[in-house]
Image (cartoon, rainbow, N blue to C red; front, top):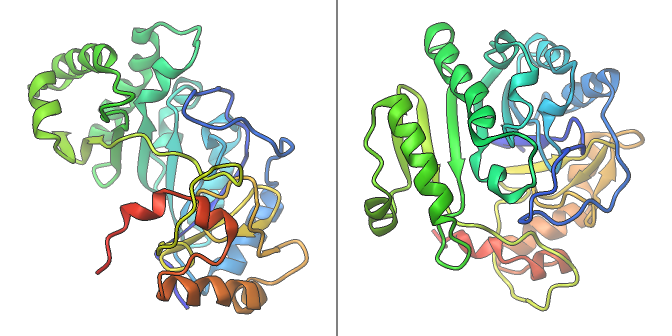
Length: 290
């Protein structure tokens, strides 16, 4: 059994309260370096790519470089996903570490918080990172995410300001009316630096009134490991509602062979959402049947 990637949450600390994210309900926790090394050893037969994100922001960790070093030492590739708020708190060399394959920066985090930073102060470290990447790590991908392009919660005024800022920085025309009409998936700002568009999504919750069947990539292309060691079927189960096991007490092999895990996998093969949280999830409807 192989997976494209596994989401390994280094910490569930985010530091922000984005209006599009549900509040944290589990205790604050950061995965120790020693346990992270154990996790990598357990994952070695199943994947070679990890994403350091579930609910928290890996850049909230001052010793991020140590986790990246272990990633490299164990022959994995990593993917960072961040709000961008902590970019300026790290040495740029850390953020273009050879362990990293890609960095995703959620730009729409800025206007969904009461940040003490000005827009310019928020964007400046991000642009410095982009420039440093162009000079020092040509293989690294940077995705500047703008996942607010839907009609209901669209942030047109913010986006227009952002487009003007990026247009000036990269010399790429970004016309707000054209982008809303044509709805491109992404725009290339520079080599391996993309502005990536999508719409808001609803985090699954057992309290949701929605209920449906369907299929999902959870336990197909990926699964997740929370900072406390709990293994979950997908990257959206940030609270461990569908816990499959705990790497403090179980092996990865035994967790993947467990009846609960197998039932979820078999269910999705037949468009059957076995778990209650999967039934409540609307994100699964983004996956079209092949």
